[in-house]
Image (cartoon, rainbow, N blue to C red; front, side):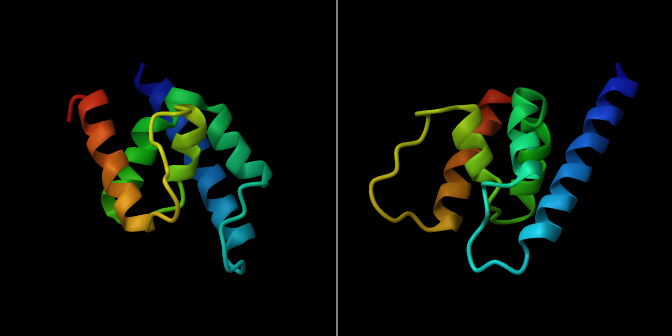
Length: 98
């Protein structure tokens, strides 16, 4: 089980690093990106790692959560990244039992 988590963690970190590298120069996050799509394809396996990233501070990874859990959070116009990250932190802390 631990080897599987380590492999999943490695896969997530590789995708996150490559996504950040390829989109760091953009003024907005590029979600039409192979590595972002790979994180989304990991589905719930990626969620604990996204949660850990959210605990570090606001991150555009919240948009992967929007795709993994569609219609969980409703956006009514512009919502600051910090606000939506806090909303997802609360949701995930309950879902993950933290």
